[in-house]
Length: 293
Length: 293
Image (cartoon, rainbow over all chains, first blue to last red; front, side, top):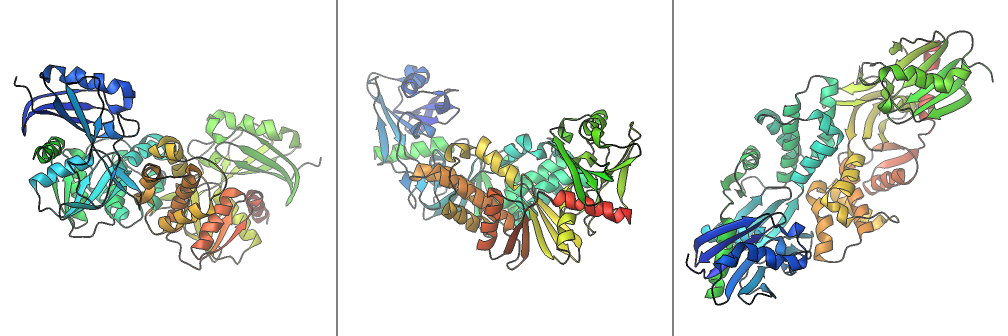
């Protein structure tokens, strides 16, 4: 294998991924479960070397890392950049001291919004990767998940963003609330989901939660359909304030993305999906190439 | 002690209370932790006798019970009565077979609403007790708690009701969500609470939850104030759809009732509190006296 020009690193809470790069080309890829969540400060460098040692040459190799590695509990805190601003800035990286002189590690800053208070770490690189491919995009980039992110883009700038605890709330309600007796996993239930979306988008998600319990007491209820309705209630509530007609890009793939696309279509949003798998690498590449100019 | 005319029983999920009654007068009171939640079907009669055996005379003593004792998992299921209807009906009680011939146990039916699906068991007796004291009341009776009940009254009839999982959601978020790192118990924080109420009543509770986490990352945040803000968000959301000027009676006492009164005042509702301690007994007495007529 050629010696890489640089190494790209996506270092989240639960996972570590690294790519050996020649410009924008991937020479090799490696990953481990050494996420930020299980590492003490002194364990980050060994965890990284365990993946990339074989890639390093005689000289110094730049390493560009993003994600929770830059959190207060990470390898080194990378202060947030404040919106409105571009999603990333090659001039605003935080260098980390390493013991191994072959490494020159820099961490990408996350984004913060003072009011309403909000933060992100890692998604900003996916957004940069997406905008590298679609620089003219204006509208809403939506990244579903445990904490779903809504990122508003205008003129290649993040104007504002919001985090919605939709995935975490759904899991808490299904597993720990009284509703756990009334829901069950199963095949997709588009009608029940759509009914939930309608009610949730109408601002009635919280007021309607208990009906998932009560419907089985008042009459017959299908726990699989009730789970879909709960999902629809929360996703409908999440999308309630997005104006109809807004161009929306949902970053992701699979069942959850399909649910967001269905809800968005129901609410008159102009939504398409964009597979997120390669966007982190595209964003890191964008930063590397900016910095190399 | 005189032999009672009848025995009143409030049998909830976690507690059992009984009163020896002479008409509307209390001769004696007893309680235990033998709530419905920990009893198998055959254990209800012994749990009751453990409290009331000493009160029973030679003949048969009517026992009037309300609450979760009438649930599907209770002593015997008491089918729901459907709203709109009066809160209770002495002609609509469910008799339970007992081994002890001195007991004549009857269970008060709960209320159900088909759409939106909702149920209550026990609160209907508190409402009957309240209406016995204030028969002209029209408006909203609000019973805060783990599952807060909103009961709309017109012409001494329950026209509709809704259950809000406010208390359960608050506990889940404080104890099991990522927000648990950002909240702490402490002295009342009226300003933070009022801020939460304003945002929650504006339909932004779910969209704002994550700011409780983010505010401590973006700047300084007081976990005690953030907990009050979370409480305000959820209570504000619960009250969002109650029209300004609605007469509201909050049944309860203590800190939680005070929060609801503060939120209601902030939102222009005409709210007063009514101590709920004696309302179950007043409601059961009402049913007994109706039936004795």
